[in-house]
Image (cartoon, rainbow, N blue to C red):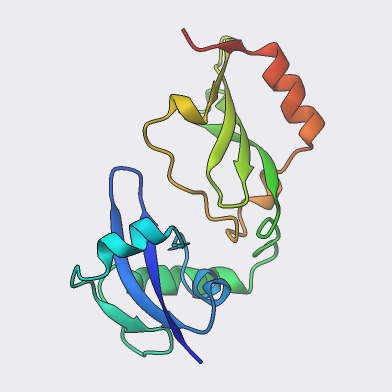
Length: 172
């Protein structure tokens, strides 16, 4: 039995929205990369009569945007690490960013909730400066896709995250 679910691909500065008919929210996030099923009744009510594309999860053809997210998930599904971080209450990552021409990267320490959104973060810059921020500091906080098979390589312990958090200073 399929139910109609409101689904968004939140890319930070906006989002793409659809109604997807599926047997469960879990099947939707296992079928499409970088989406979330919106369960907040107030948000669902806002889109009830909005004329969004309605899609059956088993349809061969998907609307633009959703088609690429299905292809992306299909490519990820057989890879080691696929879904390894999904379903956890909290995930801690240590990821490099902004590596340029062999220059050492800056480092992000991230604490992600079960929905993939950052709860806390530490940015460590090349000069050693470490800045910590929390969810209230970010006007934009798109979710990280916890099914992504590339993420488990960056997983760290809660203790390692807490150590980075204690050593960092608050953003000015």
